[in-house]
Length: 420
Image (tube, rainbow, N blue to C red):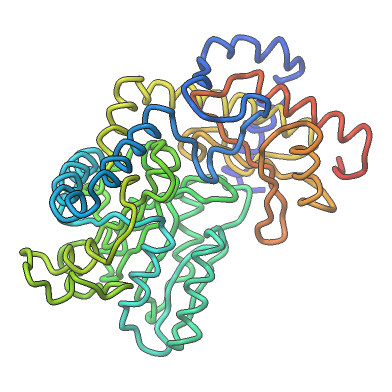
């Protein structure tokens, strides 16, 4: 074992060794994260530890969406033809300031899958060209690129990033081992869905730019979760979700496209924006913002979303939630006879974390936790390994994690679903 690996190994296990009395060690965190569950529509009879999948929308934001829907239904023609563009411009200005980019450089999309499919359909790669990625990507994204590879003859290279992660330098060294003269595109998630690990995309974008390689960043879990500065990151393409950690209504995401690429990106749906009768200065916006009748109310809530985050000091709440995630991680590792998949630091983990778990039936375990113990938490498989991923937001408290801990204790004692 190398010196760096041994040091990290000792630090990780030293952290675990300190956690011998969970109730005494973790009790003070009740005051750290003030529950806000009454401001959400979540079922109070369930322990919700899965914000990462689809988010959760506060009542005030949900009500704002409904107000837009009511306004539209009061006069659909007037709203869609006269009011929509004004509301959309306001929403884009608000989001542009939040993620630091030009409002003319992105369009709203329902989700990152639509965004990445839009990019994919517009790429003009040649047979034998390569897309470099990792083996930690989201399943829908892998499927998108596998589809494209079959159609085009392009090679999708899933470079292995080994676990446990020891350092940022390890991730970068392993990732760039997949680089070849045929690499034309880098596609990588900034926060992995299943392992919940934060990847060093800034360093990857910087090097890719030096090499003349195009970067596509999947930031589904980033906005509202960790800081996002598009101008500083400077990717060619970036997609992020608002309905996860920004708390927007479901079906609200965005696709950022660097200016030099905008004329290359074709719309998934050809509609009134193509060869528009009243074109703007940007065909990119015309093509992608006017694709037929739809309910865009989730997008229009963006100013209300940002106002809610600012009014409720969400950066402080996010920091407290991250602390709760990290402090509980060794406790679950000890219970499950597991080891951390990365150093216990906000450099690698945010408001969600994945703990390796040994189970013969992940789906049955997930269902048991939900049906018997009323806990909503995912049990997921990646690269033949199984992970329990818990998410913490401002509506959670230490008691939620205690409920999960006790449920797992009971399952270990009474069933053979978890092997320890």
